[in-house]
Length: 511
Image (cartoon, rainbow, N blue to C red; front, side, top):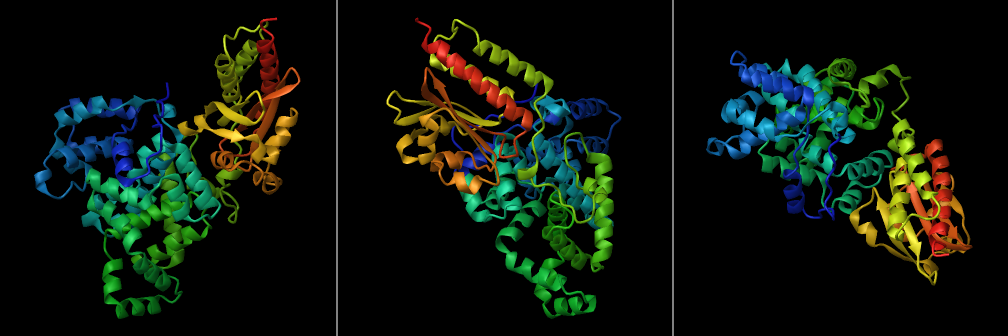
């Protein structure tokens, strides 16, 4: 069974609260890796290097071992372990085996998709770092390899516990171009880079990881200067500019910067190979390696293909796939990708719930019993975020009765009907409104602000339901902000009809 995402009642809003929460998350590891590593640890013929190589198939396991070794053992040694082999040596095989027993082991497909996708980006970054830099800086290959793999690790527990927040951040910042500062403070209460740096320091991750976050936060002006030089097409002129700024040259040529360059390339490639972010990181890499942009692009594509051979998996997007597309085609934005249709199993559960709603005389003991079944039917037909609101007897306000896929605080939402013309229209008679990118501007502004903040979506369904000639309920649902699947829209409509009949039967049960 998939591991359940445990979400606190309220999203943390301070750095300390975020660190405390994410530090407590136990990341799942693939069952296959678990069994292989467990067998290797019990085999006296296997070396620490053999065990470390086996662990690489599970980035979460690598992180857990590095954290355990650096945070709880031999802290008097000062410097954190820069490689997994050193961490294993510090920890010892007995304690490593104990740690392994404490970690949840799941089948690959049962691990949260958002977490798996982000870990694959980290594996891709590690391959880029190894191919581009490790051979040139052979003495430092371990620092390059493990630093690049773990650079994004502070985001892994966030991807497990708050996947929808991370997806909302990507949709609004990466695809829609909204202000990162504004979006992050709204969604997280803190800047994401500050959170990553704080968590990396708390875990005592390799210094090159925290160094990269320090650069992005506090040395962006130096990075901008380096990028300005990198944009100069004349390589000789580039070198002359670096020679004229020795402090900038020394800063930019630090080996630790390879970790940031590799992760910048891997992250940007998730959107598409021709987007401006990829080009910026390729230009910086070209300047760092003192070679042409054409060469860097060729090498980066080769490393992406190598990574795909080792790390691509079912259900995940690897940038190497895009190398087969027409060159100017970008990966579809998340906001443009329709979700997959409900599975046969989910549709079976949906039909069962609808049949239970239609039973007469009404089997429901109270309204909560009825609306709980209604919520389950709507989730089964593919609705990822939804709210069922009940009208009071005077039809002056709507109160949230059931929610799914929304923050816990949404359950206490109360909406005055008179303050929204759209609500007044929907509550005057049973009706359905489907928001699309074409009509979103027209109708979204008419939605109550609280409802609009919960459903940041250009693809939304609103339907009012009547019983005995009186509107009593409003359904609001979407599929995580993505375009609505046709089969789910049809099932939504049929479910609404079933709920109306159930409400009528329930209200007439005494008769």
